[in-house]
Length: 226
Image (spheres, rainbow, N blue to C red):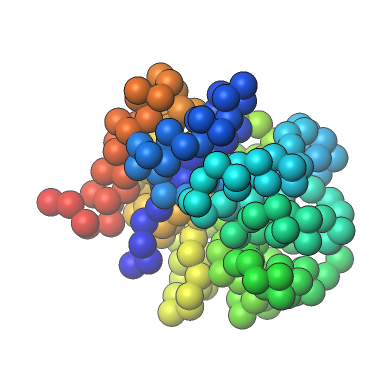
């Protein structure tokens, strides 16, 4: 099994004190910071751009996992790479040449990921497996935090696990991840778990306990705890 990682989504953080929130959630045990970039076009919401990524890069050495929910995506890949992203994930629907876009990300020295919306078939990654480091299975429709987990994503995770078996590819899941659903997705093959409100609820004093609860559920499902 690939290493387990818990990724807090900054969409659910205190944006008035974003740098402080990021530092505290990493100190509380989070592994990687997840940043959702939305353009109000590809998804029905607007979040932030490269400057926010650059600002967060300036306050933490943690890996930054940047999910680009924007279209067209190609003109902005370099800007997010220069801003400090370590992983850049794009959607097959966000440009005409997925293989070329993934190659551009890797040429910039970044890990490349592909995100699958609930209605996007797993076959979308079949012919680019050699160009990806990460597959992100969306367990909600992208655009807003706090949505309910879509249970059919478990079958998709299992199919992605089978398709990527033996390859150096992490499987990420985002949407409705809590201590209650973490075990389900980990059991289906996910090893990177993105959680927003489930991590940030209760404020900084609750971060460590929230992260530990999610991690424990996943570890139990992976057979790492008795």
